[in-house]
Length: 335
Image (tube, rainbow, N blue to C red; front, top):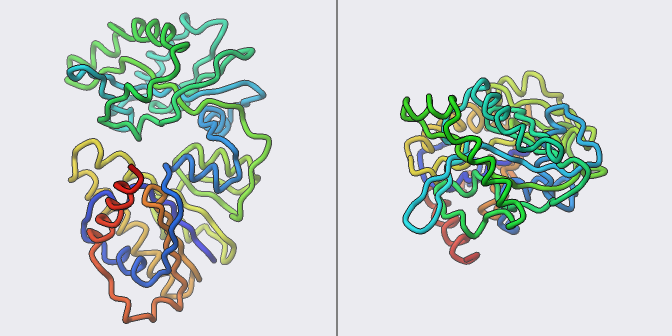
């Protein structure tokens, strides 16, 4: 069996991770082009664009049809001097009841042109009825956490609608209660990932496991088995076949470091180490899996480790912090 992990932002900060460090040291590294998770997934599945809205709807068993869709994720915007800062929904807790109430408040402003679906509290999809403006920001909100969003705002044709939606959200009872508790209010939506559902998708895998809806939507479109990642590699391996090639998306680190709390990042990395990297290293040693690949899209790096590679004792593991420095050099070169 060949297991491929996609782990965006794995090299944002260093922390002890012995199993991961062993896999990186013994594996063969290949370099590619730095990109975010959505672009990597769509490239891997031969999709010419990143229609995040349509793929998210499809992953949640909605019928995208031939309409244009966008993601319209709930966000918190905060003024900072002469620009706006964005806090994505992944950075705060939003209940299903709050999301449903807020989405319902926006329905009158959207009627006749758009339909909003709060498929998950932190993931909203907007269907454009009968055509209309289909361009939006190319950047998902998680990649703009804590950043100045002015250069990434959707085209001006969306601004009047966004102003109306922001007015509808202002003073909503759910937001009033959130403000009283000291929680960030949902004062806007972020429009991104416009497009129609691709006619087809393809890839080399027999299954896709992810909590990320774009990966699940692409897997479903390609006719692959698709499911949530579950509790970790031990649980995943119990249900996995003995052979084949399988993709697993681990995106829990995404945005954690950018939001300014290294402790959160390090905790999540420790969880990935104990739940995924350590069990998969053990499975590689025992022969349960024959090859393990780790893709880090934003670092433009992939590492492929076969079971026989573990015998290369002269390739000593090095601290994850050294890969963080490598990643920093990639980012500087790109900018």
